[in-house]
Length: 565
Image 1 (cartoon, rainbow, N blue to C red):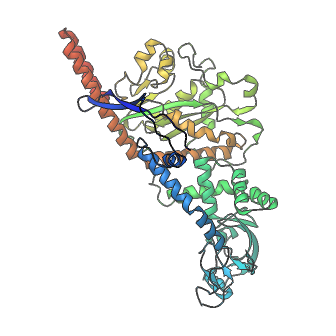
Image 2 (image 1 turned 180 degrees about the vertical axis):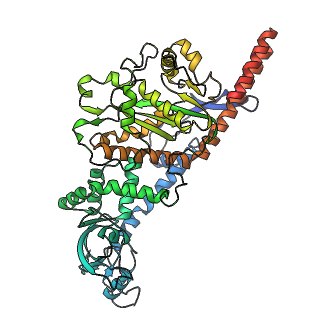
């Protein structure tokens, strides 16, 4: 017997919702809300079968997304056992005929096909100069083949001194194998390995090499996901069931100079500047003015990108040179020309910088206390400086002077957005230099509310002509990406640290420039909507304004809004 339950009826109550649109009048819609209403009429018993049916039957109020999600889950649940059965069946040979010669076959290559099997002769013929690892059926399971891997030189080395060499190679799947490689005395062994699609672990007499697609995957993971060398090696270990000795071999080979030079080689191969110097090396914004116009630049400091003094020294200069980070000697000379008292005051802004919050005892262990940088309004990285003396005014002044030097032969007006632009302006006036005629200073839209009211009125990007809807917080978004590298770069030598940070900045700029057209369209659409709302608000004020003088002042504000947007 089913248990008798009381049923309830629902009374529909309509709720009025008014939505204000941008391009038209307000829209009114009604939402129905069901309220329980007691019903004292006769009830009927509910059986267990009816209750189970009600649980499986979707409710009428269920959303379309929820229904589609349930259908997808039920579809996967229906085939998961069949898929597991097929995966077990693929562990054994589906056929014993070679796909090439139709003879008896015991070998397979997973990297070629999961259904194709080969005889020994056809396997050697089709896998010449290949680093695929075939497997052989032993009547119980597939085991790694005992056939050796050989790499032969291409034509043109018949008259040269050719010799063979046995090397350890980490193939594209991350497995470690032994390969017999043909070498030629006419060129370095590193160049011969590159012809085979391998990257050497060392320059002189390499004994270990990596598959180039494997290193390309690691470079992309390290720049996009901040994967460390140790994390990448452990990933390959659990993917391929490597032993601890194999993982240690892989880690020792990757942690040296090899990966830094491969990352730089990969960058030079992609940008093609060595072939055509006129090409962009990834440091130029496609949308910023090149010879004439207004250029908006945001400045900021990051005190998380530090470097420990105990992390060693560098023997050579960074591979990227001064592509992103300026020469530290020039910065030190500029700092010597500015007194130590030229530091930002804290009475104007309530925000505290990282060097104020960090203890002095901890700062003594660092030789780099942070990074000061600049980016354009489209968030393309422009210039960066290693800081060693806290956030001094000398760093933003140096960056501003360097930007002016780059634009000295151009008709470009520089609009600088900085967290304490008011302090920079006051310092320039007190020093007697004054603000150059081709520079305008402003404070970002978020940081300006931490300043005093006069600074908010005088330096806000929302109240200055020429800044439009730029919020000036582009450097904060860049820091959110770059600070993820801090746990790796703080233990690096100076050159390795600058190279990795430069590669990260170039990768960030590549992300921004690739999708720049979508970003500009979104900003244009947002500006059009804000302009429409502003015009509606101004029109309503004009209609209600009794004073003609107020009307004239309002129309002047309206014209100013048009210039800003």
